[in-house]
Amino acid sequence: MRGTRYIAVAATSLTLVVAAGCTTSSDQTPGSDVPTPTAQQTVAPSTSAAAVTSARDFDPAAFGDAAVVDNPYFPLVPGTRWTWEGHAFDDGERIERQVVFTVSDMVKKIGGVNAVVGLDLDSNDGERAEQEIMFFAQDAGGNVWLMGEYPEEYEGNKIVKTPAWIHGSAGALAGLAMKATPSPDDAAYAQGWGPQIGWNDRADVFAMGEQTCTPVDCYDDVLIMREFGLDEPGASQLKYYAPGVGTVRIGWLGPNEEEQEEMVLVRLEQLTPEELDEVRATVLAQEERAYELSDVYGNTEPMMSAAT
Image 1 (cartoon, rainbow, N blue to C red):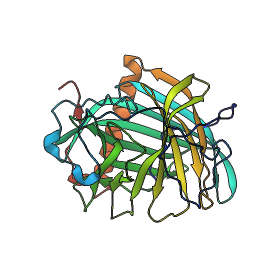
Image 2 (cartoon, helix red, strand yellow):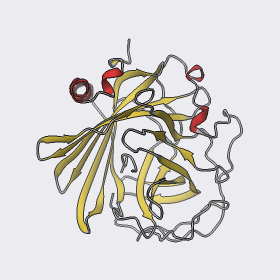
Image 3 (spheres, helix red, strand yellow):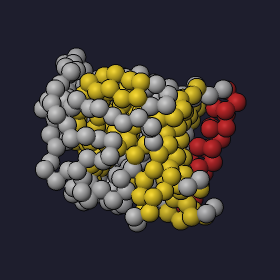
Image 4 (cartoon, rainbow, N blue to C red):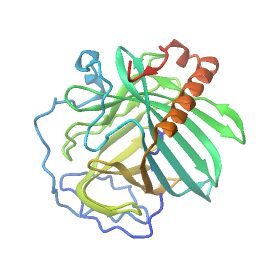
């Protein structure tokens, strides 16, 4: 059960030179824009950050009071909005998809850690499919942690499902969203654990030092992460992260990858104060619903302004 995609369709094809030491299983079949990797590492991992190797290394004492996420591959500056567009398949039928992710100026304390609140809006064929609030925190070593998610899945204008998981509630545990120093030599790690809903996503480095272009820009030193679920063998997503930007592309691998999502970054914006006010109102309204609809969310502290 892979989590939210932070991105859709480029007119250009990719030419990849993939990092040496990255591993791919023999049952993986690349998507149309993802050639089988050759080999060559072009970015050497740093050794200056904390040596976090697993979600088991989560320690609330490693976080400061400020909710700042400035990891080069995963920057979350309040008021930043990414829009990705592309396509996927649903029961064999192609659908056009748009994902819009915005960093709010709200903070939520989870497990004693102040987390940045993000708003994710997914649309399929022009209709809202999911609206989700997500929570990220960065430790002193520069590792970004996913602290939980509260999604609302829609059919028409009706909420039909809210499969939330929050660190510390119902056995759920935070996971790594992005390590401070990703390396092809790292073993796959948990991106979170939500046993109540079967959320068990994992990730490893597929390639480093790549190049790719989107309608927004062309990017160097791109990191490609492979994401997969333990209960979905032979199915993976590829997420492309550009330094200072974040996710710029999504692809797929594997003969059992049914969704085959392909997306690219089409807009990157910094919101006006008025637009950020609207985002704040939206996440607060969703939190109010979450307290009514989700027992898991009901155990959490309310959001607060990052300025307080």
